[in-house]
Structures are given as structure tokens and as C-alpha cells.
Amino acid sequence: MAQLELKNICKGFDHPVIDNLSLELEKGEFFVIVGPSGIGKTTLLRCIAGLEKLDQGEIHIEGENITNLPPYKRDVAMTFESYALYPHMTVFQNIANPLVAMKKDDSFIKERVTEISKLLKISNLLERKPHEISGGQKQRTALGRTLASEPKVFLLDEPISHLDAKIRAELRSQFHNLEALREVSTVYVTHDYAEALSLGDRIGVMGNGGLMQIGSANEIYDKPNSLFVAQHLGQPGINSFEAELASEGDSYFAFAGEFKLPIAEEDGKILMGKKISKCHLGIRPQYIQLEVGSKKIETETTVFQGNVDVFEALGSYGVMMVSILGESFTLLTDPEDRYQHNDKVSLKFDPKTFHFFDINSGQNLI
Image (cartoon, rainbow, N blue to C red; front, side, top):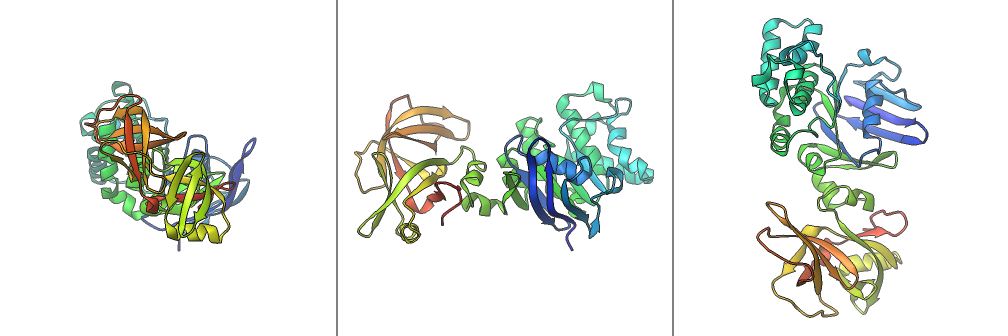
């Protein structure tokens, strides 16, 4: 039996926000919903928590239909982007508040708050009040209060989005070590693909009122079922452009204006078999290789010469944008490299890494 089950739920305001969405989560599962801002991620959490009334559908927790129950009877705990801390209470008291309400004994409360405060790096702040700590510390305190409770479902809405990069990375690595999360289902919302990939047992990419694709990090990243999913998982984003497909003997090619790129024979046969003549071609930046020195364009090879538009060194890696025959490509490079605008470079493509999406629906064709 699923710990949390959403059955064909719908919610709209001036327009549909959630449209016929269904989902099942097992006990102990950490499910991450990723997608752009304004797509309905927070609305979905608010519906589960009972803060928004469904237009249609049902919500079940451990087999019980809770669709019409008020929030306080749903046995869920939600943390918001806003902190909502009690100003007259210390950090310790704020975190302990749900445990006090459940009439837990003092030793249990102290142990639980100590564990959570260590995880969140706020052990030294337990005696301070909210006006005495920073915004990031307030956010961690609010998250701690949610984690301290003992619900059947955790709902976490961008819980670490306002923290600095170092703290975010530390918390991501420690979330799965928290005992409280092993006994419940957790729905975690973020717009940060790195959080989604590192945290989720499964990931759901939200768009068009529903979950466009659900799967493991590797499944969704390596085999996106649509251009929308491919574009919203990965940084830098996937390169994509419209291409016409054609065969020449036993060889297959994608054309974009003067740009002629060979595609894998296996993919070409599938696409030609489906009579696909035009598509969106997608190429992940990490699968484009920078060739040392410059080479002339050879019509039937995977190496092409282009001009550097932009180069940025971003610490552990560099990002380069290169124009080739009217098409622009982003790739990852060594951060020690130094390139100037209009420098000539050669790029090598691996046809086995290409994605082909329907020109109209955006669905993956292979």
C-alpha cells in the first residue's frame, strides 16, 4: 500500500494549474519535483497539505481518503519558503514546538532537537530568538521545526533555496542520513536541477499541469521523454535546434541550413522507418568535445570548425558558446582554457548521444 497516493487531482485558479495528476509514493521514499517557477509545484504541496481545496480528485495517506480533512487532521508537515517562526521563542523552542504539542518527554525533545540542529549547522544558535539570526539561519530553523515533527508525509517547499552554496551542498549530502525521513514519504520541491538529481530517489519534472516524466536521476537525464524535460534538467541546458532528416545511401544526416551533421545509423533507421523528416535535435553540452587546433569542415565527419561567441570560467569548469554555420552550441571546457570572442575552434560531436524530439509535440522519437 502506498504511503501517499494522489488520484487524478485537478486545481485551477484563472487557468488550470494541476490537471489530472496522479502519483504514488512508498514509505521512506524521497520524491523530488523539479520545474520552472510558476509551474504549480507549490500549489501541489498546498493541495496535499489541505491549504488549497481540490477541484477534482482524491488524496490518500496510508489508504485513508483525506481529501476533505482540514490541514491539522492530515498528519502532514510542510515547510514554506517563508519562515513563519514564533518571534517570542528561541531557535530551540521553535524546533521543539511540534514535539511539545505532541507531549513528548523532555529527554526525547532534547535528543531530537540536538540531532536536527547538528544536521542543519545551527547548534550554536539554539538560545537565540528569530530577530537575532540571519535569513538563512531562520530558514534552517523553519526546516528544523518541520523535520522535528512526526508526520506520515513531509512536504518541503524550496527548503534550502536561500542558503549559501556551501551550506546547500552540505545539507544535500546529509538529508538521507536523517532518521526522521526514513519512516515517512517526502515530497521535496525545487527549481534547482542539481538538488533534484542529488536528492531524489525518484524525480518528477512538472509542466503543463502534470508530471511530464517520473524516474531516477539517470533515467530522466539520459532518456528525457520530451524536449521540455530535457530543457529543464541539466546546466548548462541542452543544445537544441530544428533539423531536417535525410538519408544518403547507408548514411543518415541532420541538416540545419548549411550545417550537416551525421547521425547514428541505428537512430537513422528508426527515424526513417517512422517517416520523420523534421525534428528538434538535442545535444547535451558535455557530449561536445573541444578539439585542439582548428580543422577544416569535412562534410561527412563529426568535426566542425566554428567561432567562439562567449567563454566563461566558472571555477571547476568552463562554459563556451560556439557558432557553426548559423547554429550556436554550448559546451563544457577546462576552466584553465582562455578564449576570446571570434577565436576559431573545432568541435567534435558524438552521434550516439543525440536526442530526437517531435517537431510539434516535443516528445522523444526514439
